[in-house]
Image (cartoon, rainbow over all chains, first blue to last red; front, side, top):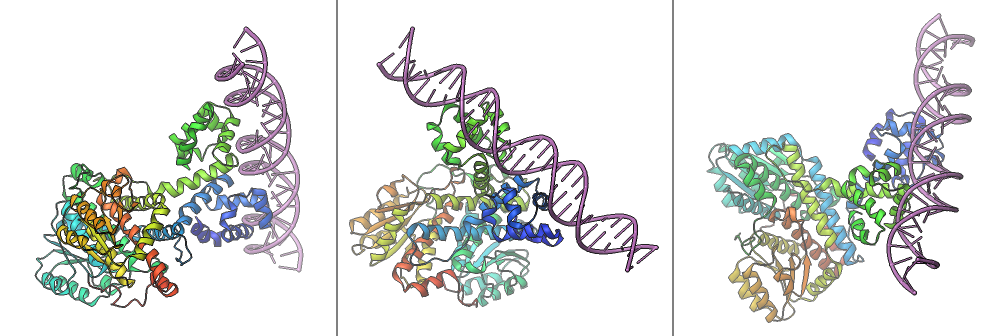
Length: 279
Length: 279
DNA sequence: TCTATTCATGTAACTTTACTACAGGCTAGT
DNA sequence: ACTAGCCTGTAGTAAAGTTACATGAATAGA
């Protein structure tokens, strides 16, 4: 909503721009104002305000206020703010959670569909699937393995450079390596990805946009997280969820749809076996 | 907002309850309606609608609509909906991400502060900290270890029953075991938690409300996820984030606040060492 | 440079909306 | 059965949003 106003601002009439500026300056207060007050504050007439609302695609002032409130609510609560030692437990957990959520929202919005489609297709045709990652990303790889195992798709997760180096060189053609790295610059990982490609395998990269890993991959899935939150603590969550998407997409395409779908969306009986699969 | 209406419903007057029911039945449409239409649809008079708005803590109908829109916007976009084989890549990734986000929002809202405070305090005083978890939760434990290691706090993560059984029995007094299990019924984990308590250690449980693990723990952190999404695929994310909160809380209390805080909120130089810490 | 035309902006009138004061009617206690 | 108190709807009011129209400014053509 805010971005839309910003985008449409140039093609607005001068007096309407005054309204736009006022709205962009203090969006929170706008929802509480009436046309009259808003018109007065922006030094324009009431109909101009209405014309502004129409210009940015609303049905009127009421509709505008509603959309504004909705837009603020969906963007506002999950702003990433730095933690400080003075924070109470409540604000602390709020901040950490909000940052995690904001990170996922961002990842969700920038994941490009074509790449995702291509990735699922590659996975679907692959005779063998392997997940490589180091450090925190190694855990993501393990998690992906674990999840695909539950879906009946055998895979291998490696976080040891020598192991995945050897494994990559020996991959059959059209295999898929999912290389996970936030920075996309880990040399060991790049080397193994290179080996995999030489062996005729495809590389799906889960990494940041523009990284070396992204450039040398068959398909790159960008899970960029906001610069303020550029830490393994957050990128992890985004990577995990991207893997979830891949797993679900693959399961839907491969497995007998109805049964496997339910297995994904609701768990079986909640007994002690439910989370006792060894890692 | 919706939960508030539900909570206040019993102490509403009969005709006001009719309005409440209508609002709860189709919340999305309400924001577009006027008092007159809403009153007609609920078969009550206009003033009753206004009284209803006041009763649930709004300043009037306008305010009510605004809050409703805001509430819907923050809850709506991340509704958990089941995936199906017909979904395109875009809707699929949207659904998976939305469910992940909804899960975190839910976890965020139900994490109780006192327990969190107590947990951080226990961790702060602990001479030794260990994380136990099986299966997917084992990865969460490893992740927590990894993260605390980065913060300069040595810990141990175990997912082998025999290993954490032995370790638990040998814990010094006031040590802390963080036991992670979605169901809270894994027998091996319960046994080790029992051993830890007998050894004089505290147990922080990250599990579902009312589980056996929660009952026998010193402090229980509930990371309940919505019943529709009751799968390891989601609880994982909530558990990870709860661990993040614990780690950040602990680091803030222990370490030299300013330096460590920045280390948490923004990463160092994005070179190849950034995510190359071995698992 | 003057004029005509088009577009932007404000004024004024209108409609709908939200809200308030009051009175009728139902419920409950005695 | 009667009365007191409270819930509910009717009628009225003020203010809000919206529309039609007229005036002013700006631009282009002669």
